Image (tube, rainbow over all chains, first blue to last red; front, side, top):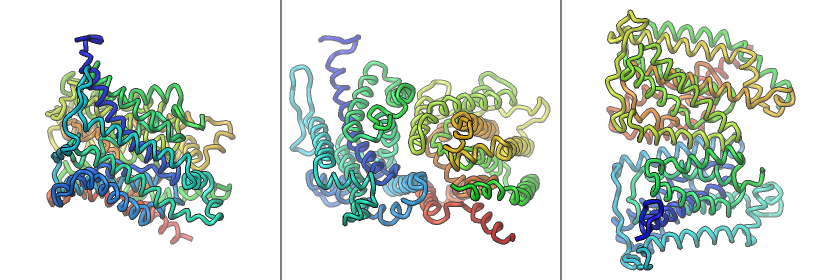
Length: 295
Length: 323
């Protein structure tokens, strides 16, 4: 067996794969966060809580209703997205005219409420979610063993990210969205229902978080705390990438997942702070973020 | 912001300062007599958090910087103070000073990084940096992991007063808190404090006056971090414990809630907010209701319905009643 700096290559590749998976979740979440910020000027602190809700929706649909994996993966994001639409209509909408800080604090409050409620009802312990039979097993690539489900998670999240990116950069609807980011008043004057578009944007991005949660359910156990632990890392990712570019958000997220995986292999003690250290370096060298347009 | 509102925002506090000063004096008098009626350890908790919230308010209320990382200063100083008192066996004053100095240095470092970015990014960067401190506290051997640093000796104030006596401990913490509040009050009402408010109102105009807003922000942030650390150090000594709870992001959130609920940008507001939140948690801890959920609910209600906070709304009422 070949070693790299005393680490067997199979272990290294295994950690890289785990890093890529974490990176895919960061990508799905930071993508939504970046679009919400671009359109609504809101930092959605509740993004992690919606990710957790996606996981719980999947788990509940399976354990209480006995729905299959694929139905769940479809239904969970829709449910989370619908809740997101309600939150936007009832609360966020009324805060667009005041300082951004209030919408940040509002979504923080919502995150605490959701986490507290789920912890109260379901307890802090993780809930196991079985890998669907069609995706169990794995492929032997010769140099390493690739579990099917992990390959599927990476493929699915990348596909969703790229589809979202294309929809925003290449379609008519995406053009309206980008125009409304620049000048909502003018876009409204052309007869486009901007408030509805904002609601749908929020619902869609929160739905993405729900999708990530449902996708993560079989990998990590579903627990009330899963959202808050991931959201802070995603914030750091967003600070590193800058929120100006959607493609940039995806690339940064994947790269940081991999960096985290590498740290876990070579210097495990620092793996939980690796992303933050990168963030500090980026702030020092390029304060506006790697992919920001403002610099 | 035009010049008339700018002037009025500076003039208004002057009229209110007498009311505020009166209320503050009344509060101090009440706190001196309070141990007769209420359990002192509970009062100590209120005092520590009142100072913490007031220190936090210095950057949120007066400079307009939302820091999501103040738990790192509060909890970090608690660890350093506890370690200094227990392992290095430093006298009480030096241990508290060590914790406060640590918080100030940490605040300087956080500030130098976070002030490079504006608004919403500032909040995210401070949150991420504080999370880094949290992970360090989980892993470093001297913090004792999940157990924290327990059985921290309280020691003797000035080498004479035995602080194992709870009443003596209470008055020591009261003294510390009042000292911290006086520093904040002096800062806010100094020319320096007026420049801070001006930065909050219109940063570009302050720059055009030939001042460097970044420098002022950094000094204010460091001072706020040091005072938050002072509050954390007092808490560690009085409760004889430094634990992970004080460095979590929930703690950063809680101090924001205290400030918001009481009324940001006022001197009394954070103290009122801290008393409400600590009281509420004390009451809820035995009720079996989910505390996190209710704290979150308070956030939502506060942001949606009264953004000026309890004392802020009261202040508006007082202003209106006076011709």
